[in-house]
Every structure is written in structure tokens, then in C-alpha cells.
Image (cartoon, rainbow, N blue to C red; front, side, top):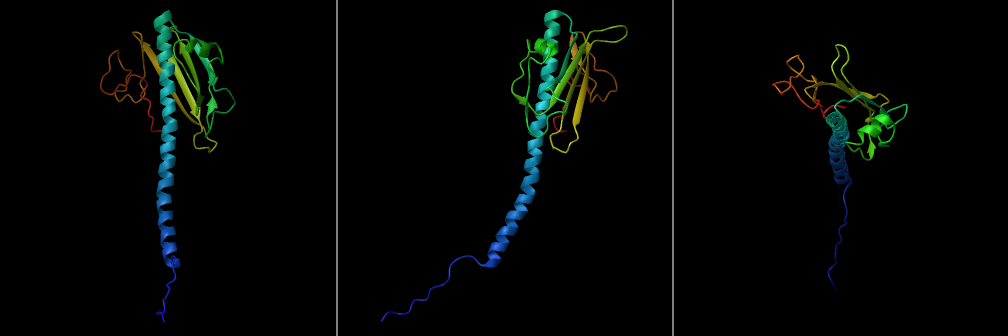
Length: 188
């Protein structure tokens, strides 16, 4: 006769399953907020790129024509700025965007709604460029907005945003002055 074989039950105990579930829960509670923050940062980076493209386009038009008096309506169009999903950008929305698109290209869909106004000097007012972006990336119904005002000096557009000197940047960068808008991609 053969000796009796004892079979042991296989599988996981309830305690082991509970420990694994707790570990997965802890890891996901750390990973989900980190993923959300990274997603917001990548979406916010679009704003700095597009606003600087608008500025580069206005500089290109100034170099080409010697003056720039131009405005672009909110683009993508609509009463509310885009939210958590992208909306198609329209290069041919109005005369301002059509003219700007002659020197710089905007492609695809956007998370933000952009507009701009470029003015030539008049009276005591210098030549300025105002760029504006609005969006609701977190979907809370509250639009986050950024407006950057540039002043043209000797053919270059400068801003005093984040200027620690308290004065407009001069024709050459100095400590505390940021040419190009000083856009902070870390805020939304």
C-alpha cells in the first residue's frame, strides 16, 4: 500500500489579501495626486509656448512692416475658455490672427483661450503688446488667467513681470529683468 499523501490547501489567506490591498491603496494615494500635478504642469506649459509665439509673431511683423497695430479675438472662440479638454485653434478666426499667422504658425487644439493687442505709440504711450490666456484646466468652473504686457523699446518687446528692480527692463537684460515675458510654467 502506498503511504497516504496529505494535500495542503493552496492559495492566499485573508490576511495576505488584506495586506496587499492596503499596500496598493497606499501606493495609489501617492501616485494619483502626483500624476494629476504632472498633467497640470504639462498643460500649463502650452500657455507659455503660445504666448511667446504670439510675441515672436508680433516682433516678426514689426521687423517686416516697421509697425504693428493689430488685435486678435479670443481664440479658440467661444463664451467660455476651454477646460480639461482641448479645443481646436483657428488660425483664420479674424484679421489679427490671419496676419499673425503669416509669420508664426499655430497648430492643433489648445487648453487655453488666447487673445492679444499690439498698439503703436500714441501721445505719451509707448508701443505695447498685451497677451492674455484663460483656461480652466482643473474643471472647477473658475478660469485661471494670465495677462502679460510688453513694452517695445528699440525694436524689442520687454516686460516688467517678475522684475525685482521695480523698473521696466532696459534694452539689455539686467539682473531681475526677464526678456520674453518671464512666464512661469509652474502656475495654472
